[in-house]
Image (cartoon, rainbow, N blue to C red; front, side, top):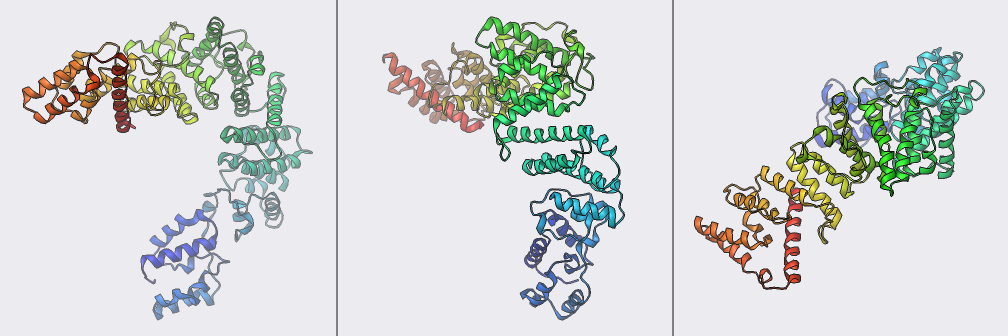
Length: 592
């Protein structure tokens, strides 16, 4: 085996990878070169590659001795060994990432070509060759790749078709389309599904219906991702198709869309705020549609406090039933006539509900859901010192009946999932950031709590260029920030924050300033103190300890003219705001 520098080896690897035209092989090739010392790079080249000739006829040749050149020349004279020849059946099922360059990929056998092709015509041709010329059964073709997963509602229908190349072709089109949807390549997925629909049109009405619904799902997922639409499609077209799908559920037709499609349809209408349509979706027989109806009714009446409280009770009870331990669930089909007769039946399982929560993007809808879960969290935890803030929290009931029957852990987990989704949807929503800070505080996670408290203030005040709204930074927030800094042993920060509360907390401030070990900027914060009593205490403290430099810093802060008690109120307030702004910006730079 020849040896050369790392630079040359890497260059040869890059040439080889370029010839194979598929970047997915990079790590496999490098691993093989690094671990199989008894093989030449030329042995690894693709069958149709010009790599071997390039090595023997190019500048690379001068880096090898005569023995190595003789050894390599064997690969020129003899039929070239193909890298694809080393594939076994297991390897064929390992990789199925859709290539965007189907026509340029040179593959040595039909199975490989089928793996990487997403062109309907090529797929049909290869399937036909496998089944007719090579004698492969349709079942064999359909099982080539485990990532070609056909939805459950279509799987049995396809297998009930007559065993033929068309059966395998339909299966591959649907399976590849679903895989493309998983990796968010929606346009090509739609193309495959449209071809599949044309093929099955004369074979199975049921299968055609499901394929069209999955085409709708691709449209909905694409719109949910970036609010874009497919080619030659409009938002009104998408709304019409969505409502048609929901109507089929309400009418209880024999062929029903899957839960996944229904939840995307319901969430889509909520996200575009079609509140009027959703609020009239009573007797739908679907848990997803029913929950959206309840939320839509509350949003519709949100300006009216009295009406909202009545409607919020319906959502409150629905959430309670979902998280009640051992509660009866709706049937697996998603329809249960008793939903409207027995209000104690849960409209869906906890796991399904958690997934559904992440489909919403409308800010008002998300805020309503956050307030519902935070209210449950506060009531079940029953600790007033750790209550979580949220908008609309005043609209919910103030007591939970039989709290021991609720799955508290699942409620806390759902709140965490909802908050993560909310902050991904809109990471600069101040009230959500404040809620997330309170959650961290309630769980004794003081450093993350400070991060989110500061972040909420930053986005609400344009980095403290204006005052933070009192609704966001109230007295409770400052007290929690004080506690966070105490646990983080940032004692000077504690003292400064004690000025921000409605009543200056001198006891906590003086105690904090006497601490000798403080993990903050210490006397650098003295210029942010405006309370004369605290500054005088600092001068006395440092004089007693003989800390002359720190005493001088405290004296300088105390002697500032704008802090003179004889100044007009507007000058004193201006001095206060300048120091507040300076300190909060310093905290933001530390914790963000």
